[in-house]
Image 1: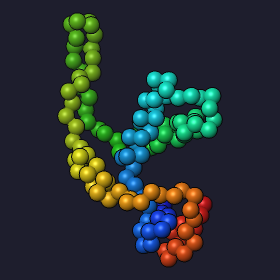
Image 2: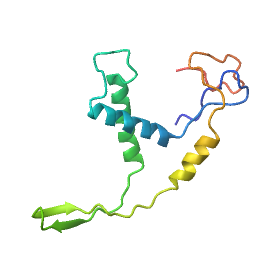
Image 3: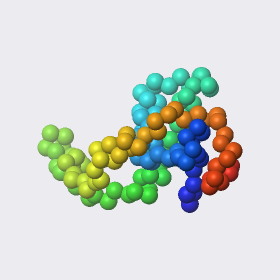
Image 4: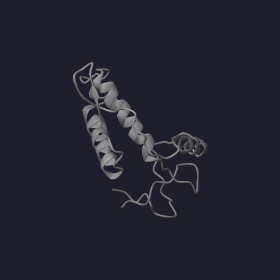
Length: 130
């Protein structure tokens, strides 16, 4: 398991991290945009390139498998449709997402992160490279 991260350039003693739930929501939004044809697939330089979409789909798959929601799905009969339908009013037990979001906002980096700046004096040597 990866348990280290990069230091924040220009902010000694602080390291960058984020909560995966926000990454998952980003990926879901990217998939949503792709489904609704808001992606210019002809522009390889575009932020929403196909390899980014593939990454997001796989990230969502991993999250679903690792955090499997085992809430039972029940079924009801629909006389109107003359068939069985999934009952949409399931009660899920979940974490307090608003509290998680609030914590993330409170701990958000105060300076912009420069993805092109390498920190050479990392005292923990966490950003050693891949």
